[in-house]
Image (cartoon, rainbow, N blue to C red):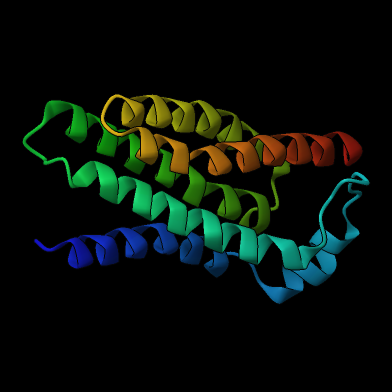
Length: 159
């Protein structure tokens, strides 16, 4: 399989996670339910999320490509890619929980499991390719911010 085909597959997987979330986010949910939530002062404007996630999903795909290129016959590569898929599934779950079910508390639980899954993926990638691991650093930094933001929204909207 060529590098281009592999990259297309990985881009489809990562952006597929985004599309799954988008399917659960209606403009009505954003304009009524989400708009009505109390948010912390550090909540970014809505327009920030699209470009940030686009960049992060591209970095994630390239990172996974660097690992895949090392060969699926390698046990460490297979383990690293399983961890990658696990964290991607947890990532895809957050938006349906937060926006689809309108359950920020459950979304917080998901993201609290997602963070160590990303950390484990970075550690697994680092054993195979330092550049692949480094490409995931912006992702875990953004998710760290998202944990704090999600927790703040939960606290500000209790009861």
